[in-house]
Length: 513
Image (cartoon, rainbow, N blue to C red; front, side):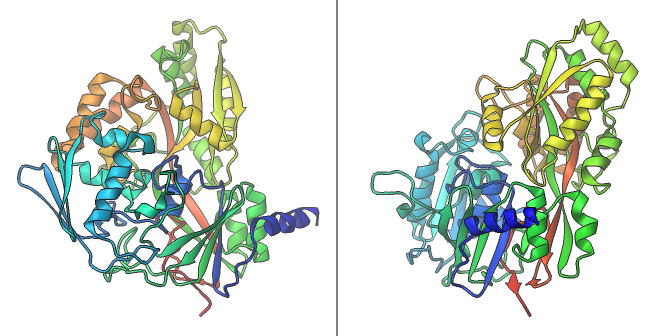
């Protein structure tokens, strides 16, 4: 009874029910970091803001880049110029019609270092590629010229962690140039944000949906309800109670709650298989962890079958590779992972002269994220071979800031979806002097990644991915345990739910019959 009263109080403070009869209430395990697409972002912000703001291109379910606000796009024969033909009649939430001038304004905004766009380094020459110019030949045409052919440029524009390079209206900024709120083209408009509690999106009546079949982040995206409210509820037990009481309509849940919730006649459960990677990352410049033998000992001390089965309630499967297990590039090579061998781990520690130095692993307790539970189990396995491991439990924003600055020894963290495998390798790799958040900086690996990024030919890419997989198992800058399986629970009143890699996509959903 006490927990129910606490829940009622929590929800009352979070949600002032809108004056709409048609509302979907969904739970997030953490509040948005920002309402700026691709700026000060995390995985929650990426998915939620996709309801409000859209880019020229985005991903279908297969991870292929497809037009979204662009009707079509073409690449010049030399691979340097991309020409986007815009869809006609697309409206911003303020009623203005989108033109190429708005696209240009958005690129000006993202490429301004003051914006602090998450993906600026991908297109300003830091990581090799540089946008050299962009132009507006007419109201419905936008062109971008890059300095050298790069097969992954279009993928960068689509990436969710780049905010989908969303096209925004200039009134998203205040007159003094500071951020106000996103004025986008999506099926919902940004409404009231009660920081730390909830954010409400309202139906955009003038939304111009594509007519082709809904497919991931592209195709038909209709707003079927008057509003959606994302509620920040970090505690998994509170989420479960709210679902069962009818105070929540949609939520990602813990694997341990799947069977119980499936038994509830008012709830359904779907599974979303994702490229998200659950990991322990290691700071290879740390005085202790710079010894590869200690990193290797950490990796082979873990019983992955036991660990993954425990944190996923048997729903997940081990994958030690950066190549996600539903990728076409996931072969017998990628199935070869770390061998659980505690005796060998002890030998490696002795060879390295390890003398009980403390190893600190940062983790968090966000709902439906395995960071803490993974860390507790791993700590026990590491201690069993003589490693002195201490857990440091942080709130997620603090942990994310420390990840970005490289200010950690180890972290239990997740990497957001990268549908392209080469992009997934690049996500964790790079020079730490330039990008402190990067994990792997082996120059030979970086060269192979560059080769993979330069081509989309599967026959040329597969051997590169195979070699990179073997190299990362040797270097151990990261210990990948498994790809995410995200159980999503939802009320039987919600119609149209079709979970996929991003289970919190709520367009095309309705209530009732």
